[in-house]
Image (cartoon, rainbow, N blue to C red; front, side):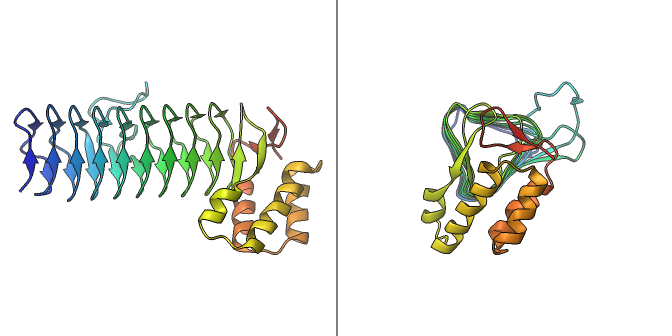
Length: 267
């Protein structure tokens, strides 16, 4: 049976698994669904239309599903926060529901959100994402699988961070960070390929060498974005990772980071 501390307030309309642990002074709202194996320490708040999967761990003062910090949000709007399985939310982590009716904020599986991190409305966070202390994702941000957002880093609204990318500590970006790359500083520079992350996740030496060549062409060359992509298509093998990089850059709406500080690569 569920282990609910006597000081916790759980709305009878909430749908919670039988084995959930709810600590002292937690508050669970009426439109909340929480799956099996979840543990909530003290002073957590889960409200709004929030759906939480299985085996998630919430440390003290985690707040999930509150109204978005957006002047365009209308009180009473039905929007959602959807969370997958196996995530760790450390102290004072916050995530909001979407802004528009029926819109959603999504957090995937096996993410590690450290102290004081924030996921704003309508973000889409992939699987195995790590956000270190005090890092922030503004509204409509997309973060791909296996990314690392280092401490005190900030991502502007509507930006994307590609799969296996790293954003270094104290950085801030208002443009896209392509997959497999390391971004640093205020809108750059891109410092290189995320070699350690790729090696740890089993990417072949051939793939890593190809991504190094891609980095040299795109980020160290002097051509335009289009010319750089044409060169990549002509000179490099079209392995899935190269195609992923090309598709990411070609679909950007805000531009991508450059190899030079505060220099954004645009068409």
